[in-house]
Image 1 (spheres, helix red, strand yellow):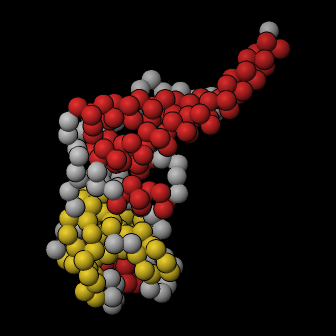
Image 2 (spheres, helix red, strand yellow; image 1 turned 30 degrees about the horizontal axis):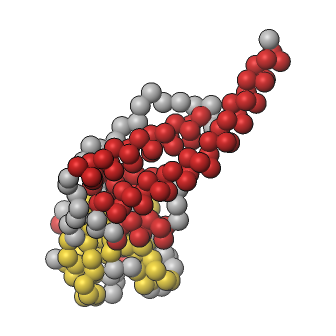
Image 3 (cartoon, one colour; image 1 turned 180 degrees about the vertical axis):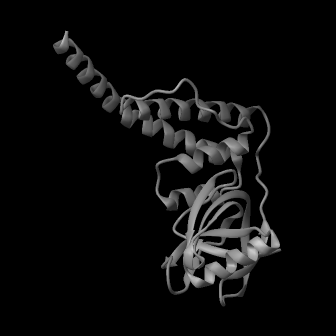
Length: 216
């Protein structure tokens, strides 16, 4: 399978959205071709080099993205909203001018079924919901519920796309095809994040209650 490729300083997961502003001539050409041919394009994290200007060396594992919304601007510039669809691995580069085109293979998740994985998914979902509520509570906000996918693989990608970790850590999660190992890593990360944020939220709540006591 051939795909036009877009190296970026971002990691896109299947099921996640990514806004992109198109202003370089080479990517104007690429996106116009994708729109004319209803084609996906590949998003790859940059391993070395710059996002704008010269050539960038990307990682081999990325996500095929579909353009879900386009806003045309002056001088051929565009604002895109893209939806991640499938993981892929870059097998070889076919062309680098005017933009990168590669031969890719789509990747399928492993360890995605069974009671153990379902239990890990339940744990990851509960921890993510708890962390999200704590995050909101720190700024005096709240939510009744957090909508998440039920499928373990989709849930793992949902959580991974929203973790407050470095893009290198997200790339490792993207490259991990085992849903079980992805969920285990996310559970560890979320557990640590909850341990860190809980005292801060408790302190914020205590300060808020003290303030209310003064008002009364």
